[in-house]
Picture 1: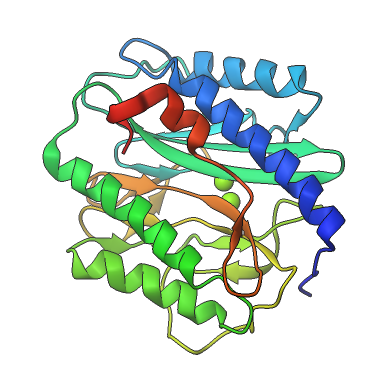
Picture 2: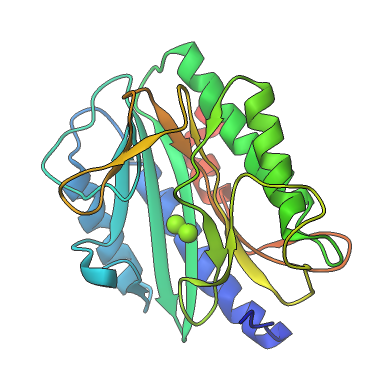
Length: 260
Ligand code: MG
Ligand code: MG
């Protein structure tokens, strides 16, 4: 069942998603060699609570922390720990907030210091693919138009698309219908309608598409241990142009020219 949101609900979702953006912006100040992923998690949890919201991920399905932090070959759902970031790492930080009854969800893959140019290309391509998918997130198109555009853009550049994990509808709950795959057929799938809110989140691998689910019950990594990138926005479907409810502006204000 796909719930269409009213304009009032979309404004509440924008508030939750803007807070996610601000939290990621706060984290951008701290992503550097030597910081542990648990330190980043605590910064985010404090920031979210100080802004009157709750971290959605904490306790979700038993998840132990406020952020999913996935380094290098880890695709998504990494658990914060006392592992430190190292020069040359890439680190996907996925953040969710619950504010005034609605969810925000957005993710960004950061560079730790200088990153290999081939890996930079993976990051740029994944971020570009997100915005290409968003271009199709308009009233009258089909879900498969988003999915296909992301897949085509990434595969044309020699990267591969994770199949086991997908984007999702979002609203009062973090995961609502429909699923939003990053692969698919143009012209197929659910009809997109004004008021649908979805999280689009390409998870793109440098090597092969296959992933392994680690024994910790959460972390998903590439089978070939090559790097993976992940960018996510929550958007509302509108006529003509998607309304992006989350934001990378706060991150990019901190990173300046070093932004992806
Ligand atoms: Mg997310
Ligand atoms: Mg999501």
